[in-house]
Image (cartoon, rainbow, N blue to C red; front, side, top):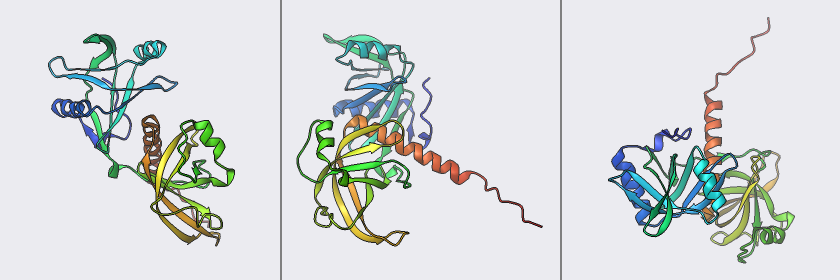
Length: 268
């Protein structure tokens, strides 16, 4: 039995019928499947090939890299993440074995004991401190860079902003007013690099649309632009990491909120 990922209990669907139907939905809609495993968080993009009710098994595509396939077979736990009509879907498996579907090699495993079914509105919004190290480097152009290095080199240092908050659906950041008033336009889409400064050095190209721009006064009395953005598109593998990052911060805040307050005894 694969251990449930911490903090996801409220989104569980674990009856055999629910699990079967959810995985059939993912299969029938040909949803891309992010497969990750191992301490090095290896992974690749796959698809569900078959969901068999009679044998209570699931088949999914192998990777193109044979070394990656062998590493997956040795892994204790394999995590899967996909999106189905805007809903984030998670499940895990183990004891994966090689099999054949038609004339093609596939991986096969038992149906998972549960599926995490999380709609976007259920995802937590993380308020980020000034020392969080979470940045969005903006490319203020409609040019689409395929290569991350090209995109990074095209972004000037002036267009790198620390995020104010972050959720699965979007983010906001503060910027100095001069120079951005004409560049940031509500309703316009942009390309950028989103970097998770949690020690993992994970970054990805994201497409987003600006939904609001307003001037606010900061605690220091400065006038800055508060810019709210909504994600249009991001790589599925990065989406998986983003959800993990947000959920970890949510759990951390819940633990802090529930911790008892220790007050100093009054001086006599």
